[in-house]
Image (cartoon, rainbow, N blue to C red; front, side):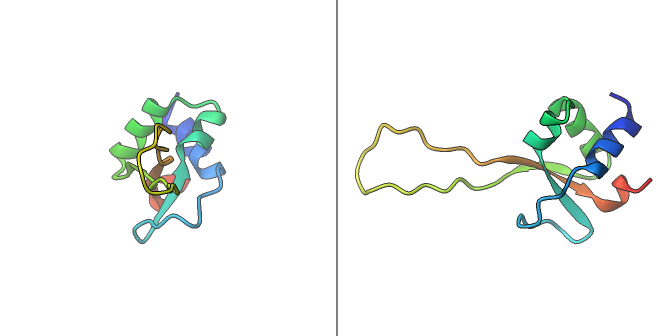
Length: 88
């Protein structure tokens, strides 16, 4: 996927408003990128080349005290992208 196609794809996706990001950065959920047809590793390389990074939300677990064999949930992965990288 070309740099311009990745930039346009990320710019067209709605940022996640409730996940903290540094000033002048936006958060884009990885599954939304994959659902739009992009490969996660290509997008990550593009994001990192522009000063962004991949992060993960903290999973929320609610169980009773004691031992359980229920697998622990995993947080959602997301890209933290500098806003200037998305500008045309």
